[in-house]
Length: 289
Image 1 (tube, helix red, strand yellow):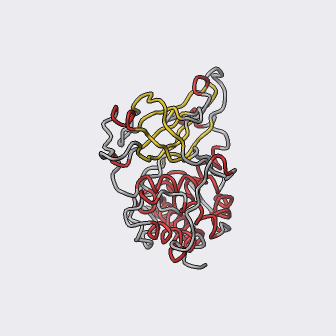
Image 2: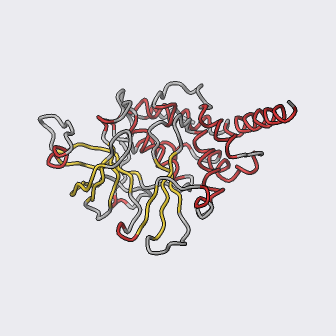
Image 3: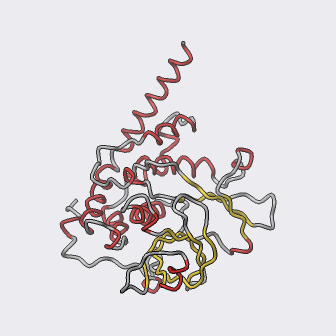
């Protein structure tokens, strides 16, 4: 694969817009502030000019400077792989709305560009939860495939944080099944430390393999095969959708990250086998003592 970073100066940044017919929506504009939501970054809930509602995260409230870039890149890679993820977009927040939230925009800017994640809709007909007890998790559509897929995905993208989901179902149907959606990717790519590709297996991922009782690579094959067969251009396209202003050292850094992701997609199976072998050995040791 040609080095993606080397092409940074030769090719225009790919802009995904609603008019372009691309796989992902482009920038939307916030038109109404609804409320502040719970969470460590104090995200806000907005209605945007496409008629949809979005959970919006602001750069100045994030733990590290790569957080919003991580959200866009990981969210788009999840969608490419067919994992259930909410649409990741960039959101233009005008000064009038930003001032309500005490967002620092600078004296010359009339808008600020932030990250948005599409909220399940229609809003008034959908029940959304960020936690389900075990008895209700059994009602999640394709639960085993979704949770196993998220596990392998997090291993590939080196998600150093907790795997977060939201769950949705029609509000008027008490017994309706839930859909699970992957959310919150700000701790992906070694928690924003993009230049440490050797940090391949975050401790959080290993513990989740133990907790979920995964026993073989075969049970995790569907998403694993999709990761292994990703083309370089697919990863590059997702990386180029990150606004340059979200990359402290420029687009070259995130294109280098895309290079690393492309290279290590073929290593995931080997790492999985190693994890499963070590957890099986640990279990056998525990039973024999």
